[in-house]
Amino acid sequence: MDPLLPHSPLTRRRLIGTGLGTVAASSAASVSAEALAQGSPAPSEAPAKPSTLTTAPVSQTGLSPRLTLHAIDNFHGTPGAGMVCDLAMHDGATYRPIKTITTAPTGRTTEPLLVDEAFKPGRYELVMHVQEYFAKFGVALPSPNFLSLVPIRFRIRDGSQRYHLPVLFTPWGYSYYRGS
Amino acid sequence: MAGITTHVLDTDRGHPAAGVRIDFSVLENGQWRLVKRVVTNADGRTDGPILPADKAAVGQYQLEFHVEPYFQARSGTNEADIFIDNPVVRFAIFDAKQHYHVPMLCTPSSFTTYRGS
Image (cartoon, rainbow over all chains, first blue to last red; front, side, top):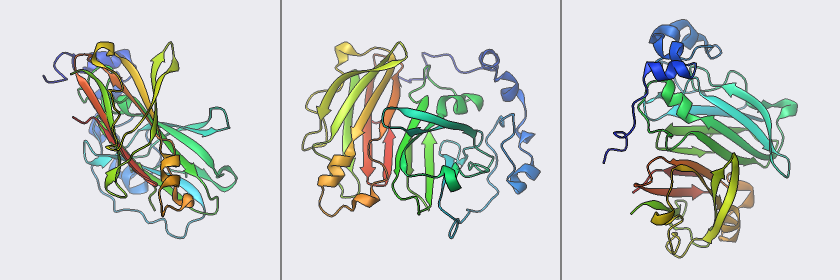
């Protein structure tokens, strides 16, 4: 049986109920070519369609110790732009929130997730709002979707090293690893 | 068959990950309640289903894989290379009539999960 059939698809009307209606209704042009070229911060209104891939990979060789993120949408074959992510650090008992960020049109963040004094060894959790991300683009999903809030847990052991965290995701699975 | 099953694979070595403890929890009233702890067998699976068909219900579920002790016990692993030590997968049963196979592929520095079959 098609898992999508018993569920009504996400419509603009339903998105309006979640405050995303205007986002879904806006055009793909909301991510301008200028924004892509400049790698400017994520727009307050996320694109209605994932942006076209126009940039080459970025090498971070030689940069100071830091934690960086790259969200990659393997469903659309695009950067994971406009993904809301909650970063938290384990304090011995629980994950304590540090900050919430939204990925830029490149699928990266405009600033490192952690750098300088904020970059410390420890156990971290990055919760990615995957269901909200795909709903925003009008992808028909079950309700609730198989994946909704995806916890990415990892450990920074050495504060003198640079840590890059690529996350490849679809509505049905994800992968992450220590990148470079 | 409905319910939940898993399969833990060490894709660094290309074999099942045996002896990995898995904590299975369900979301109840906004809190994760531990349902059971199981350990993978020689095939990287659990001897019984994580959640049997007669217990399957729509809801949010969590699998926590304690892979750090597994990697530490493995020969030739540098502990400093363990980037992912206790990955967690959270997913929904959105239709209790369907089966949810949730494999977990791991190395000390990478993790993959997906809805399998």
